[in-house]
Image 1 (cartoon, helix red, strand yellow):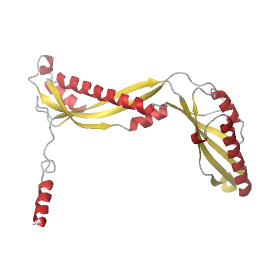
Image 2 (cartoon, one colour; image 1 turned 180 degrees about the horizontal axis):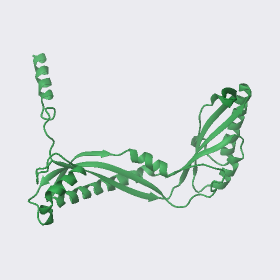
Image 3 (cartoon, helix red, strand yellow; image 1 turned 90 degrees about the vertical axis):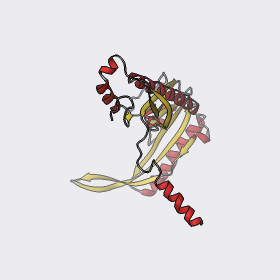
Length: 264
């Protein structure tokens, strides 16, 4: 009996309307984007400590000393131990071309160090002190806010409201209205873009030693699908241009057939 019941449930699931290829309800897909600009209150520094030489043992010893010097300097500058991350040392061979032949010329050791400071701290002293350490290069600095999550939650709400606004305006242009949301998705790729926009890559020793003034953007983008509801005939110019408008708006987010004009 249990076996028969299991088979019947499997058949019902397999041949449900959605699985059977039933057309989705008329809907409109839109994106909503919101941005809040805030003054950063912290900086993330990304350093590389690099040592080279002919003897691998000596290179390793020099690398350990260089990393210890940087660590001691950061502690002297008041950076908490919990805000410092030191990666494991990495080794490799140095190679160069001589007479059109690639040969090994020595060894290198590198270590990455990431730490966090308050944006109101002594930025210039930190920069100069690090640049004086042998083998140290500052790869990137990134500005951020300690309450980023709270700001992201706020921008997410605003993005949803803007998506609803946009969907309503598009639907009303075709004499329709929107119903309940059918699908909501957050575009996480925007977090990566925002991080890049707040990051400064160090390209030369002439980089400005002053902390850049201004704000950083905290952005959220969402994709929402709303049910599209027919609410009467198109009127005015919308009626005359119905074939053109329906086809154009379809390419901007309409899926399925429009309940007003019947176009796909």
